[in-house]
Structures are given as structure tokens and as C-alpha cells.
Amino acid sequence: MTPLILALLAGGVAGVSLGALGAGGSILTVPALIYLLGFTPAAATTASLVVVVVTSVTALVAHARAGAVRWRAGLLFAAAGLLPAAGAGALSARLPAAVLTLLFAAVAALAGLHMLRRRAPGGSGTVSGVRAAGAGAGLGAVTGFLGVGGGFLAVPALVTVLAVPMSAAVGTSLLVVAANGLVALAGRAYAAVHLDLALLLPFLAAAVLGAWDGRRLAARVSAGTLRRVFGALLLAVAVAMGATAVL
Image 1 (tube, rainbow, N blue to C red):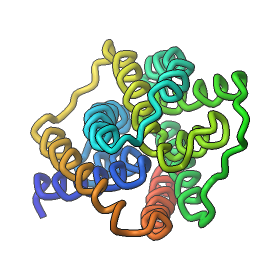
Image 2: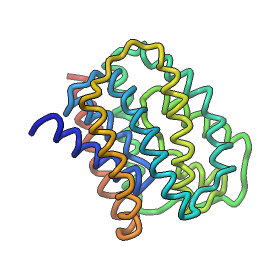
Image 3: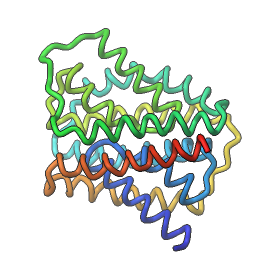
């Protein structure tokens, strides 16, 4: 199978995950870029941010048209993560490849375990400004370091910390992911990282189309089924990346 076909297939899967669940797309993007398309860890996390921003905005438009975005809550949550995202993005370029890979494997495992949970998070009914700021800052740092959108963290945090209803949490998380991803990408602007556009652009195009399909898929397939499928895939990715970094 040629690298171009691999880029299209992997991009489509990442986009479907992001569009359907508001999470998982970027965590699939980084290992796909490294192990299928030959990107270095530093280049893969930077390229992932490009994919995260574009596909998140694309999926956000679809959710916004359906009235499933809480703009004020999303912007407040994102604002807390902007500085951590920029700082972590700048620091990430200095981490050794093996350390970056192990950190990413740990986050992928966490995301996979979260998706395998059958029970959706329940809202607390109260909103804590300190907890909201802390959760937003933590999400921004994860985005900056590892090039992941962090939707698997944003969705439950929006529900439990900002009392966003589950019906609007996925769409609102896309707003947070897009904002953090853009700032983290700006934080890496100075780094001399080569991005193979001949592979990245087809990957990105397939991810954008996949995000639209994912939104439609979410209306037809139960969220629990989708979470379990992508959760199992993420756990497999985490094990493979961890083994590669150690060996």
C-alpha cells in the first residue's frame, strides 16, 4: 500500500473519530504519521496540531449549525489553557524523541480507558471557577506538549466542571480543542521541523471529510459503541508506541 493511500485512510479514521466523539482524532493522528508515514515524533506532533485545528473547526461548524455548542462556556474554558498551550508547545520541541513517545503512549492509554467506560460523565450542577481554570490549563498543556486536541479530557470536564449538558459537550469541546491547538501551533512556529506536505495535505483532506462523516455517524450509531471501538484502538496504539520507545 502506497504512502498516499495510507495517508488518506489514516486521515479518514482520525476525522471520523473527531467528528463523532469530539475526541480521539489527534491521538490517532500522531502514531499514524510516525509509524505509517515516517514522520519524526517532533514533526508528527506539530503536523497533528495542523490537523487538529482544521478538522476541529470543520466539525465545530456542523455542531454549531445543530445548535450544539455552548460558546460562552467553551471560550472561558479555552482561555484558561491558552498560555499553558503556548508554553508547552515551545518546550515540546526540546524533549527527546523517546520521552515524547512515552508521554504520548501514556495519554493514548488514558484516552482509550476513558472511551471504554460505558457510563457518560454526569454534571455536578455547580460551576467552580478554580476547577474550570485548572482543568482548562491542564488541557492546554497537554495540547501543547503532545499535539493532541484533548477532547477526551475536555468533554467530561465541560460536563462536570462547567455544567455543560452532554448534548452540547462534544460540540463545545471542539471549540476548546481548536483554540488550544491554534495557540500551541503558534508556540512551535520557531522550531525547525520539516513537514512532508505531500503526505500531510492528503491526510488533512481525508480528516476533514471524515469529520463531516463522523458527525452523521454519531446520529446513527450509539455513542457507547463508537467509544468502545475507538477506545480499543487507542489502547492498542498506546501499547505499540510504549514498546517502541522502550525497546
